[in-house]
Image (cartoon, rainbow, N blue to C red):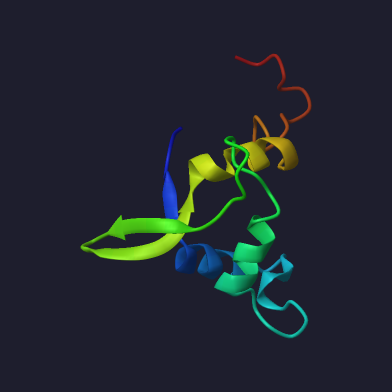
Length: 98
């Protein structure tokens, strides 16, 4: 895997609730919290066929609860579309330009 292999729950919640075009900041009048995130993710399984659950993450001398990318990989592969190969389609007339 490339990139970050784990994130604390608080970082995940901050990023989800900051998204302008997503419902995470207002779910029935309340923002997504760690308990609801945990319940939602527990519906999915890891590659080892275990429910996804938060685990201890050591960071800067402290231990936080969070999620490992490896635990989420199977769910991402099944339910999330792959990112586009190119952020923008080529301009007309430039497809064969070198």
